Length: 170
Image 1: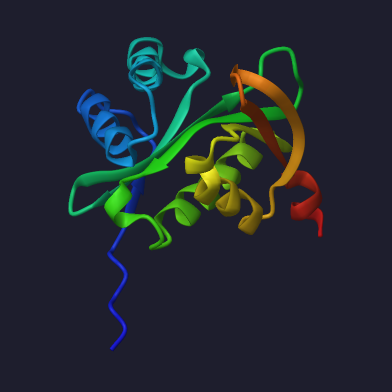
Image 2: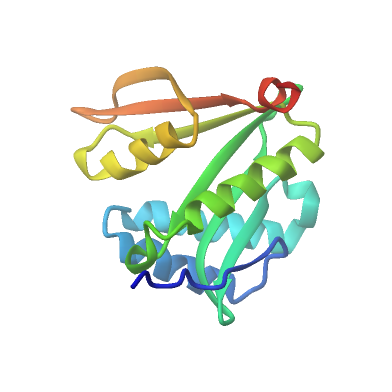
């Protein structure tokens, strides 16, 4: 008997409680460093303090009012139609259940509505990021660049890219 997928609701308004929820999500994945988690929390604070002018936009996935995944994205300064997906993560115990795919699909729709045409995602080449890289490939992102030894010796920065405008026209 196939188990039912959890009922997921999405919201795009950040709340103060999201800082701790995001911290728990990132800690559950066990491959984010403390300084990276602090940056993720700072971006939520920036949005809460400055609002849309911060340039940071969010989607939060909830199951029974508990945040279980999120994405943070925004326009890339000095570009016309390019956006970064700064962060995306799902609680480790719920990965593989379609939550990330749903968050990403809604994020891409929102980027198109904001006038964005291209999305860029940066990630690590470390082995523990293998599932993340496979997820991007599965969702039709292409590897656009590799900068060796970027984060640390042996840890390259990989940039994934998707042309949303071309897909929307197809």
